[in-house]
View 1 (spheres, rainbow, N blue to C red):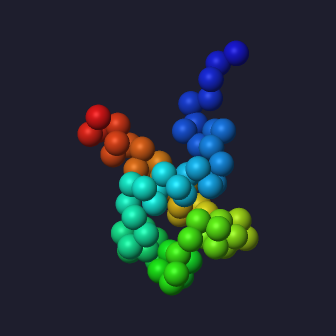
View 2: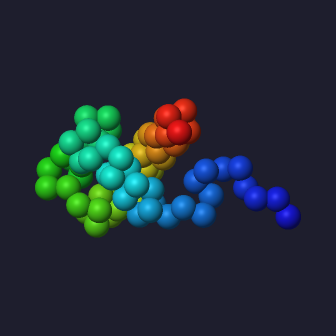
Amino acid sequence: MSASKDPLHGKTLEAILTEMVTYFGWEELAVKISINCFKSNPSIKSSLTFLRKTPWARAKVESLYLYMLRQQKKAG
């Protein structure tokens, strides 16, 4: 059995979002992905609710997460 090469494999949306908030912070996240759940009174819970119902927003979050991982790999 080979491990999946997909960095999203096995990651929950909550884990992804938590890592991104730690890395970028809510303000920078709201600049990078302009959605109200990141701008107005942001929280993990409210963001998860929105992202689970909104495929295009989730796709943007996943794309930014992959970018963040590439940046961390370059730096480290």
